[in-house]
Length: 366
Image (cartoon, rainbow, N blue to C red; front, side):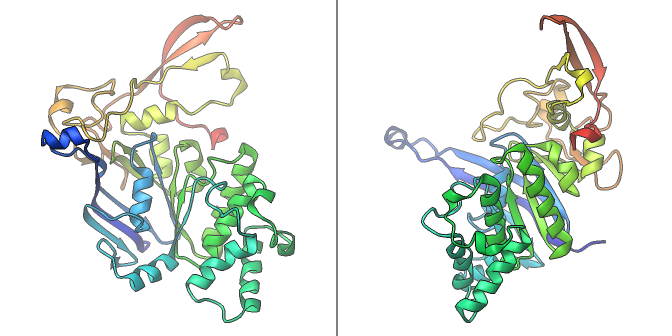
């Protein structure tokens, strides 16, 4: 069995909302946002795990907890066998951040506009005392640029970020991570700000680096259709909790949780013969507030299959299918997912409706 690089157990993060003056006078208890609410997961050596879900479900917070950008409220977080939950020693924290890096979502704001590419890539080397001379650091910078396929390096070394395209900026951000030779990278929606044509190039680049330099990724995204191509394991987050997780192919081909099925239903279908129909997303409404998480199953307020037990009892992980495929649903493996489809006439009006069984993401959508 592969070695676990990152291990989280009952990981929690709560944010306290700042009270107004009137609330303080009335001595109201402060509200707490349960951003990450007791999740468990493992990320294995030279593998990639995806966290998917709606905006506000806690995906980015998990990445920040792993990077020690924010402190955990409770639970345990291990990286390469070392407990980093309460890591606060500045020297140890600096050493840890050399081995764990983060690619941010927006390549237009994550790079200092006053720095040239050379300065951007030299800065982490100077911070960690790598390279005894300018000449040695220049060799490392050239190598990092070549690894992200920005060649020849001398054409990019003296450019400012505003002189680069979006794809080139994100490659510079990736090179900034790689130059420290990390073991683990948190990629927080690394391609969501890029053109569709550039996304495939960047994901291909990141995937090639897994074997080339022994990288492990946590891939945070709301685009579930890219996870089959890029990741080995997937965790589906809803309102601070991982409601389903398992090998990517198993989860996408056989979703056990209604929320996962709804996310897959929302993926656009590129086939020309299906453009005359509209799938109706089976869940309605907005995600509840993290300050007032529903009792029982937290998804029951939006679930089309909810029963009385879902409102009263918190579901535990069930494994009705293959090994390692878990879902927090009382009826996991028992629900036959169905989707309402509206057929459109030539004039764009609804010509009829039908109920079809849920179909998985097709190969063409990877």
